[in-house]
Length: 82
Length: 169
Image (cartoon, rainbow over all chains, first blue to last red; front, side):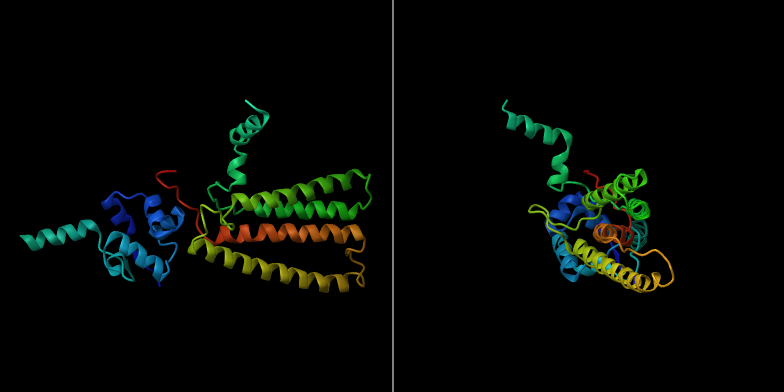
């Protein structure tokens, strides 16, 4: 089963490099690259460390369902506001 | 500048320190190990067919075989990381890749060794070549050792897609 994640989005939003995130959670920076591409499924420990680093619940970062794109989220939020 | 300082400078200028201290960026080596295995086999065949030392073909085989053996030892340094350093321990993904690559490599080598036993037992009866000269066995031992060094690098390289360069690299 595919495991989707929004690590790249959170990283870009916080201005965190792969190396900084890798150092913070104790992995090689290439592992962060593999995670972002969905080529590697993290252990529960690593997933929780990444979620804790960004200060968000784990389900905001990882999901078995594809995440909604940022554009769709903004469009939906805009429609709700009108 | 003392001689030791000069030698130290040469080590850093030539980039040997990157190999010695394993500062290399791990790469996926999908075809190079196969090429080295092919050279190993070609070298072994040349040596086995011309099992006398001054023979020209034997010397070419010897150079190919032991050149490939050295290349096998070096390729491990450039391929996926299997060895932790004090500054950079293996993380969970690297440990998983290392364990799987070595396990599959062990199965492949054991299967070839098993098939080799059957071949050697029946090869003589059928009039086929089989290693009977002590030098053949000696070289076969080194060949298996080289294959044992190359296979984990080859398997690990096929197990994972090529790494993407970090924005800071």
